Image (cartoon, rainbow, N blue to C red; front, side, top):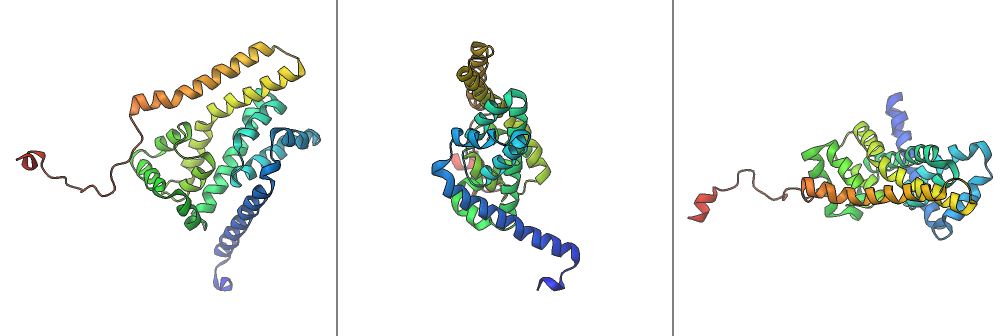
Length: 244
């Protein structure tokens, strides 16, 4: 059947299968390694890679996001190994890459599987995106309405454009990445006993407090994130008439 397709369509066809196969392998591998996955194991593995550690870390983070492994472990480890600047950059690139792969997998073949796991939350996401577009994506990245890994897949089933999703996700995830990278950096300094440990710990605690305050600030400014009722009529009845 694929022989009848034009060359560009064949590339897209087999590219889609390769993407889904890679995602399936990542998820199965994540399930197998979940009990052994920890900051200590990840650090020990990366420590021996020398100059390749940064690139491998970003690839591992991307695979972990696809495989539903906790991103917090990667981010804190990134801060401990690479410091606050490179740790933040590597974490953001890895998380965004994984989020993009999950988004594409859901859009191009894994939709039914994702829809079963998101349920009515998918309707809420689509309603929010229809209403506010990229601003809603930024909001759900900052306010954890849906878990990060599941959200990546769920947004792939919406009508959101890929470019908007990638850019907004990268920017909106930056505050959280910076905060938890500093946690890892401060922890590494505390263990090693070098640098200004108290200053690093203070910065980490301040960033965590700011991240914790963001959802409350957003809710106070915008109200609860709830879409309009899906069964609401387009032309609601006149209130004065119903009161009579």
